[in-house]
Image (cartoon, rainbow, N blue to C red; front, side, top):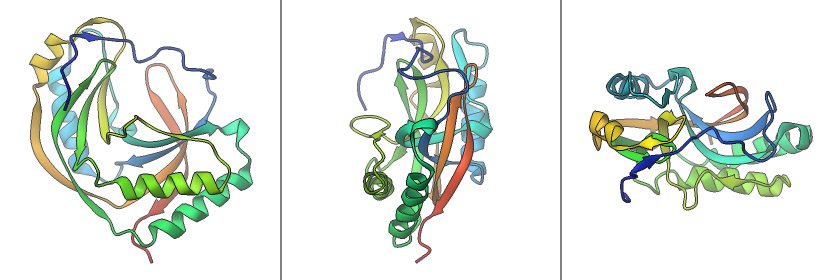
Amino acid sequence: MGALPEQLADHWWQRPGRQPGRLQYHWHILFHSQPKVHELAAAGQRKLAGLAGLDLVPLQWLHLTTFTLGFADQVPGQAVDAMVATATQILAETQPIAVGLGRVFYHPEAITLLVEPADSLEPVLSAVQVAAREAGCDGRAATNPWRPHISIAYSNGSGPAAPVIEALGLEVPPTQITIRSVSLVAQAQVGHSWQWQPVAEVRLGTG
C-alpha cells in the first residue's frame, strides 16, 4: 500500500488552466445511490472532525475519479456525444462489478478509502479510455498507475500527518458495494471542494 506520509501538502494548488468556474470533463464513479459509501465516509469523517488543516468532502460530492479529460470550452459537443455513445456500447457488455472498501490510504494531499481489488474496475477505465480516444479527446487516468479510491478529506496546507493517521487508523469496517455505472461530469473547483454538473450516466451490463 506504500509508506505512510510524514507530512501533508496542500491539495488546492493552482492546476494548469484552472480558473474559477471553468469546467473540466471527468469520468467519475458516483455514489448518490450507494448509502453504504455515505455511511462509511461519514463515520471516517467523524473521527477526523476538528483536526486542523483538513477539508472534509461533503457526502454529495463523494466520487471515484476514473479519467480526466479536457476543459469543457475546448471539447466540441459532438466529441462528447461520440464519447458517451462509445462508452455506452462497450460497457453494455460489462456486468456490474462487486468491490470492497476497508483499507485507508493516506496521500499527502488526501485521506482516501481504497477500492479493491485494485484491478477490478479496469474494464471501466479501459472503456472510457477507448471512448475518449475514438472521439479525439485527450485524457489521463486519475493516477499513474491507477489506484481506485474515494477521497473523504483533503489537506488544505502543510503539517504533520501523524495526528490524522492516529485519528482514523489504517482500516475502516469492511464494506462491499456494487458499481453499476460511470458518469461523465463537467467539474469545477468551488472553494475547497470539487463540484460538478452531470453530463451523462453510462450503466454497466445493459446489453
